[in-house]
Length: 498
Image (cartoon, rainbow, N blue to C red; front, side):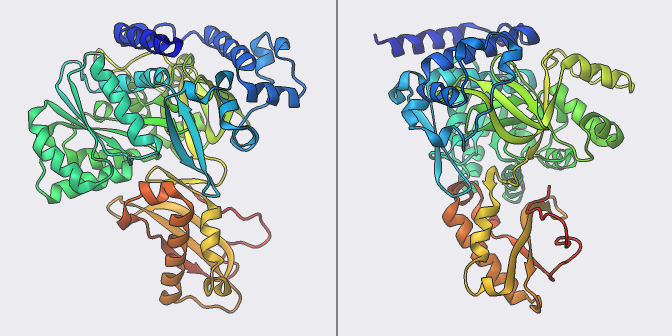
């Protein structure tokens, strides 16, 4: 047996033999997590050629990084200054790309793919996040469960990673069957109608707006979601608690704290954190007490709120954005993902809520209350928006406005955002600034929308494959030059709004 095969066998045996409670024991020890982050840095500096070169370029001697204080002064890495600067093999331990057995692909702002290799050992770490959802929220150890993977399949991270992690739970002994129709609504409804009656509960895993489409289309097709005891696992979008309540009502949910779980994940490193019954209870309270939410998060909008294991993914905050450190096929040390957000220790969160007379654990039962730290995420801080789990970049839209005859009508400035209609269906809204003396009309709006759509699909493979075809076309509004609501003069323009 090779060294790699032996390592995989050992990791599998440990994963199968270790209950979730034991796996999470000690995760509340911040000091131990800090020491582990320093140890990971030292191993990466010793074994990863690209990171050694990165440190040398910054005149950093690895043996001078001994304490967490030293660690916290290291320069952060990201796609631009690290991943794209080195051959893929040099980003892996010992420069061995072949030591990994799978690769996920994410799209960048230029449409050029970014490759993220991983090994099966990495999947076991992430499978624990799925296990928290299936064990703490859905009690899937006690219930025969059908897991329907509704993320896009292919080279993108969502579908294949999710299917793998759910199968790992079945190996752990969960009475769980996985089916992966991908983001094909018709196929999803077919497998649900055929297989769901054989199980105690059905879990749909996908992007929130797409899952809402599945629920709504299922109702039209006479699918009785409540009879299937339907639950949701979601990722890729920040949604409101009103949205959770609406979708829950349509699928027959009676327990919003246990019937849906949102994951905070990325192609770069898998799932970083996950909602828990406790975090959902807290978020729903804060949604109905916006003054408390503003006091806690510093903003009037409500972020995604998750708990995380700092030994698996160690988070830091720098200038209001998140950094994380974690071991993967490409180990990442102080990796900057440009997500706006912050961290709250478990004790601090509970104290904050107790001072306001709220006990978030009340009524949650015997699972789902673990002393794990919290991370909150507003979304990308780099002008990127997320739509059906696809990152939509201003650069993609700009190309659509540069085509004739559109370029003659527009200044090139626009504002894009994801909005909701009266039925809480998300859509991509783009407000475009017209050139001087150009007046808005519907024909121009349609031509511009088509040009944007053609070029975003051409440049962004995630958008083309993640977003359902009937939801891809943006709704374009035309605004006069200098419109004060979207294009005020004399201030720096922002191309996105949350």
